[in-house]
Length: 179
Image (cartoon, rainbow, N blue to C red; front, side, top):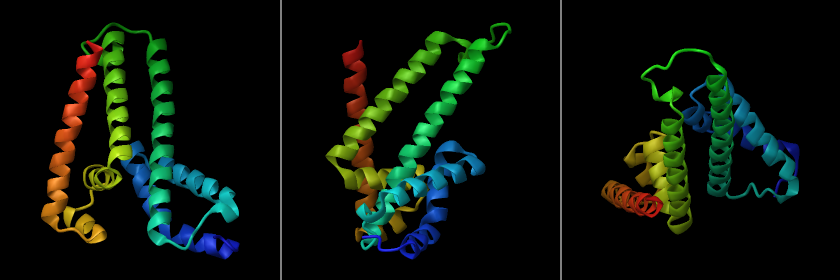
C-alpha cells in the first residue's frame, strides 16, 4: 500500500519514461505521450491507499495497461476530431479513401473487430496477450520478453506464432458472421 507521497514519487520516477514510451507507440507524438503519462500517474495517485506498490511486476503491468488504455482513448478522441474536420473540408473528391465514407466505415469496423479480438485474447490468455503487445507493438525483443517471463526465446516465438494464428481465426469468424 502507498504509505506516503515519497513511495509514489519513487514509482513515478521509476516508470515515467516507460509510460511515455508506451503512449508514444500509439499516439506517435512525444508531447501528447507525456500528457497521457501525466494523466496516468494522476489517476494512480488518486487511488491513494488502494494502490499496492509492493509488487513491482503488478505496478509495471498496471502502469502499462492504464497507459495503453489512456493512449487508445486519446487516439480515438483525436481520430474523431480529425474525421469531423475532414467532413467539414471543402474540396474535390480525390482517390484517397479518407474522403470516402464507405471506406472510412469499413476501416472503423475492421478496427473494432481488431479491438474485440485483442480484448478476447487478453481475457483468454493474458500471458500471450502481454507477449504479443510487448514484442509487436512495443518493439521489445523476444529475448528480453523471454527473460522477463523465464521462458526460452523459442517458447516466446512459438507463443507469438500461435497467438497470430488464433487472431486470424477469430477475425475470420467475426468477418464471416458480419456477412
